[in-house]
Image (cartoon, rainbow, N blue to C red):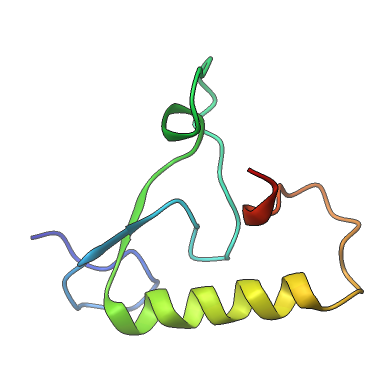
Amino acid sequence: MSKCDFPGCTEGSFIISRLSPDGFLVSTGNKAYSFREAYKRFGYCEKHHDELMRSVWNRVRESDGKGDDHVAPTAI
C-alpha cells in the first residue's frame, strides 16, 4: 500500500482522489479525452481526504477568491 500524498503524513492511502494536497485539480499535461486522463490522481488517508473535501466545499461556498486560474472541482 502506498502512503498518503498529504505532506508529512505517513498513513496508508485508502482513497483515490483527483484533488491535489492544495485542493485543486492538476492537469496531467497530456491530450485527454476524459476526466480520468485529464487530471492527476492522488491517494489519501481518510483523515486528510475529509479535510481536503471540507476545505474545497468551504472555498466553493465563499464568494471571494474565485479569480484564480484553477479549475473548480465542481466545474467538471
